[in-house]
Image (cartoon, rainbow, N blue to C red; front, side):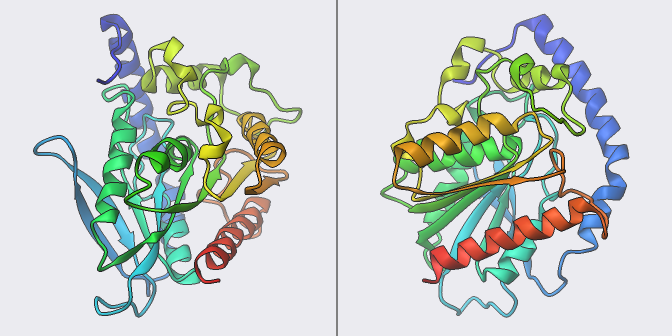
Length: 316
């Protein structure tokens, strides 16, 4: 059962979130278009509706395929991606450049899947959508190789990706084999108070009130935030897949919780762990950046790293 807000708490969150959604729709338009203009035109994109566990409801997704891939081709390895949202913003499609690049450069299928947002839909509904997307992948043997599956996510979507790579990976191990997870500047420890999330040199860091808003919208039950499905940094280390790639931004106040997880995995397991800290850039550095900037350089480096690791994992 989904967590519930108090009546007045919900009204307050709904008002604030509605205003922020309207502001973002206007303020981010140019950045989003800048990224869309860079999507390689030769990449086939299918608009998919994945059946949800809830009657009469579908999950919207975009499927990116390598150039020249046809229905008669061999089944492909697949990466399932979840976009950033602060758990409140409807931003499916903002990872189009990432998804298209990986379809081309790693020669895999990439499913960019939507998920429900707070405060209207609280935990575990977003994770249910992630599970339903993965279960759908498992039914598509003619298209996808379910023994070669990766997951990725940005910010709040990274939270969902890491939860998928731990709690859901274990639950669905008889259906699919998640071999690798990619986390970009993710919120992984919601049990830690936002006031304690600090870095020496923050760059365009989230305001404390915004982190509280994200937490309250997604998981209003404060005591539940120690659940590894909500705070996947607290998951059992052995539940992680064989390869864990944690990409953070130096100026992001969410970086320390991710770096702490990387250190635990390196010290406590034999898994391959890539702990990549990108210097001089903030949270969401890769979105809408302009050529010639440090953000552009870091985006190119990080996307190339992901493509390289996918090729190594899936085409040994």
